[in-house]
Image (cartoon, rainbow, N blue to C red; front, side):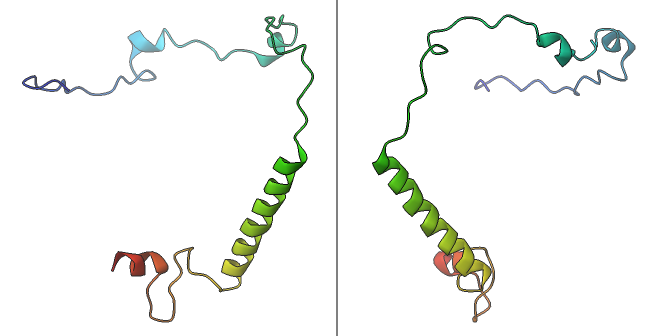
Length: 98
């Protein structure tokens, strides 16, 4: 948008209904033809994968335990984060707005 210039209004191009545009439609590529393609060389393919360290794996396990516990408590009716109404008839998100 530019100040002082009216926007251009037009209809979207209907590629499948306009004969002039339909002649340009190409068939989808064949994935079977890609099997024998040469992979472009890069600096990363020859390197071994980096193994995660113990501290990162411990943090991941703790995070998963917390999120799985939160999901289980909500599914059992312990939480209202999912938008379910509480005893007053309003969700936690609605209560936050008040």
